[in-house]
Length: 88
Image (cartoon, rainbow, N blue to C red; front, top):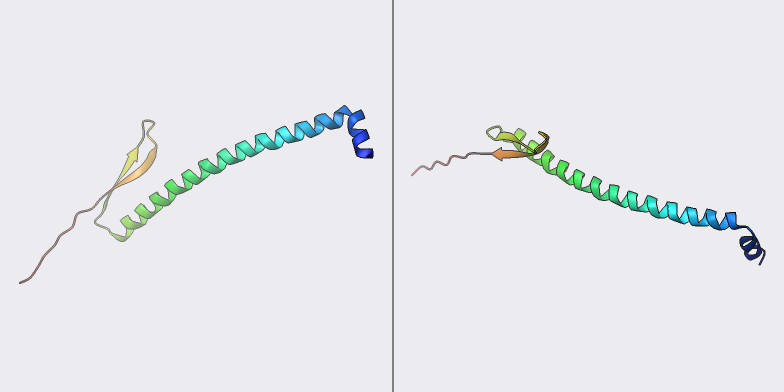
């Protein structure tokens, strides 16, 4: 009962609660966007790491960087050749 009375008579408390709710909402949106972006970047780095390890294990593999329009490396092109021989 006392809380209801103080809330009705103190508009600063109402604005504080509203500002807190808006701040939490805005921070949640930016947190979610950063999480999605970080997850996508981690997936790209994981794929590049796997290709690099594959190239180190298989020395005959040829690596070429894949670049975007700005000249940044966005991937690796892995070229491999193989030989087969048989004896009769």
